[in-house]
Amino acid sequence: MGRTHEDRPDDGPGSRRHETADERLDRNWNDLLQELRVMQTGVQLLAGFLVTLPFQSGFAELDDHQRRLYLAVLVLASLTTLMMLVPIAVHRRLFGEGVKQWLVATAHPMSQVVLGAVALLIVGVATLVFDVVVGRTAGWVAGGVLLGVALLLLVVLPSVVARASGRRRGASGATP
Image (tube, rainbow, N blue to C red):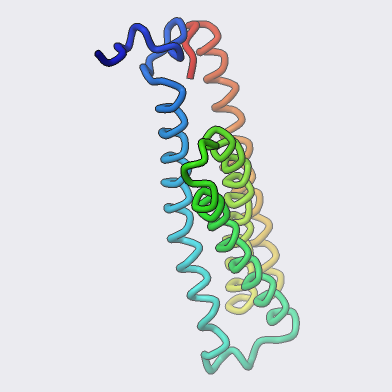
């Protein structure tokens, strides 16, 4: 006979999820993969856009600063794409070896690094486009504003939400 929700060892008092440790690891791994899939689409589109730019007739008109910025953003797009592949490559190498807990624990900080790289990529692309279309000052202003917005949305807001949800969890006795 299968185990019931009542006798699963990972159900703490007040837990709303009735799952074993293995089920939680599977869910967390699947969540990480889904988040990477979402980011991957955007990064691939930006990288594809960047790769085509040198083949456009107007590319020759870029000044040295714009070319350096372009190359920096292109390298960042390439590195970000490669970083997104790391959890999958490690999973493929370690598949079936019973190390999913380690894999999930390792992929979590890696996904945070990728998220930061995606944010920098967005800032870099916008800085380049504003620089080319409007001017150098507008490029730096747009990049600075977007960097500030990215920090607010991707660092500050999640920290505030985590603190607020931690207070509610602590008060209710529920576990994640």
